[in-house]
Length: 340
Ligand code: 13P
Ligand code: SF4
Image 1: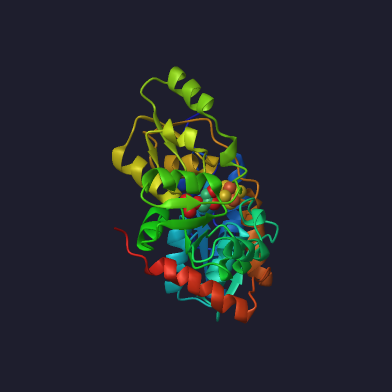
Image 2: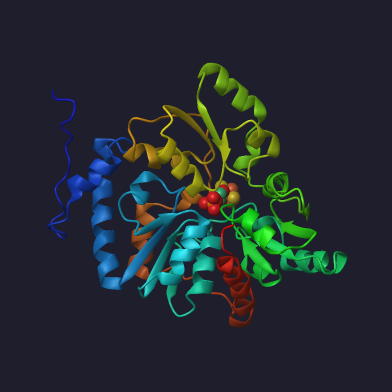
């Protein structure tokens, strides 16, 4: 039997004319042929529903290949999703990611319907701090600007001076021209930024990403021993001793750009597992080595629940208007910071 003759299903009868075999080709390295007919049914329905609902799907780089490479209109890191959310021309935005990302999209699009397919898609960083905690910090450190990672609730953003993402944290801190800055709630991101901006004293909070905090320098040593010459790229939510052992560190989009530009033969992405899968789908010549970890929150998204979200217009993400106005200001101030 020819190894390449996959039993690709034709477009389901209700959705004729869709290029489903071409779509399957994008994910064939990650989706077994036997599973495709069931997924194709959902892909076809979603593509049709996007037209009838005038909807777009924004998907984070950690989404599984069958979402990232088939139904997503805009993919990227948190910064790109926030930037693109401002330009979206649609009535409905479906956020395939986690809740804080959907909230940010809603802040920037108060007149649009923003949906998240599963309301339980949270984030350990967002859960690590409350608005009352931020007010407490403001009292304890009067006059010190508060930079809040976007991985937080709108209520926390509303108490902050401005936001940052892992893609612009250094530029945001430098833009303040302040001797001391509070960078919350990701302790490791703050410590990694501190190493790059020694002229500013960065105070932080003890929040961690449950996915990235698990990596250790021993993981990196083990992989370097097994794969001499391997390129190691770590997300800045990793502990600083892990970042120190890596060849490059940056946001998920920066990691992707680094890999596709430098084209290392073997690479370890010290981050969520779908990153490697999504790059590998379009770059079969690059070998992605483990370790990687799954984010259980990101993995709550599926083609099934994206389809359901579009069919039923659930679950709508809303932010109370007065709070939204204050939180939006923090996000807009971040978007106005120019890279140096
Ligand atoms: P990025 O902004 O780098 O995409 O990261 C978001 C995130 O949640 C990483 O864990
Ligand atoms: Fe939050 Fe970590 Fe998951 Fe990113 S990977 S959404 S920071 S828990």
